[in-house]
Length: 379
Image (cartoon, rainbow, N blue to C red; front, side):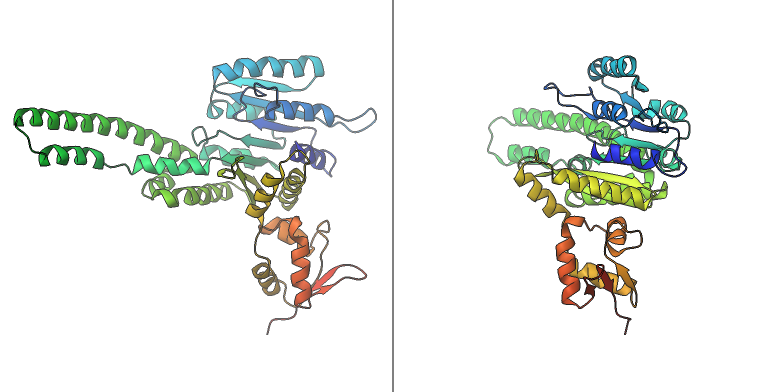
């Protein structure tokens, strides 16, 4: 909600503002959970109402295009979308089917206006490397993606499964004393039949996984992932996905890990765009969400820990990059040090005090009349 509204207002109030912007929800779900908590479609439609221009102001409009493949969820989603369209005048559409089936229609509907595409399949199936470029090709468009990287590791167990348990059964039968060899032979034959059935089923599963990975990443990338051990697969999957997004036109990617209530890392949010302003706005929205009073304090601390980086190496890199230059520190000033760090590194603003402390320690920081940083010349 925080980012969608911020994104809309920046675009619709900026210079050369488009007549309209769009939210594309590729895996929309039912619109809300069974307790009535709003999902992304409801949040987007409510945002569309909130950002509308008041009388006398230039027009501001957010369109919403939702796609959901599960019939049960779609039957709950469609009436909600109809209600926002008919009672509140929101330009909202719901389609039943796969994201890949309806993305072309969505792009025609969007008609070249900026789109924030929200892709959260809670898995890999349904993502398509072929669609990242058309989505990002539209000027000032962005992709916000939920990556089930923890689940990716489980795929490695299937892709690299072996037959050790069947070997163990055969060895146990053959090594045990027996008075009835014919029964032993029957047991071994039954074990081998079970092995063959499992191999056939496993092969079908492997082929399905490879098809899914190929669609999401490309053939070469899927083949590489299929050979990796479980402990390496998640990290490599994310790196390959980021590479595909960059190939599609993203110049800035913000990664945000998501934990469950037990503190276990479950998912990763990836935000891809071709704008420093977009990357900064996403980081500001994440920081705003971390400060939300409704967020459990333990969760807040865990998430901040995940986002915290070592400051000393960051300052080392800046000292090389900006040797001999004096810069403002203010994050809201284009060209300032914090602006650069927020747009181009993993730095978040909640580490400003650590950054200032390290800059002071090295004698780089001046507080007045404005906070500035002076990096010494190299050598």
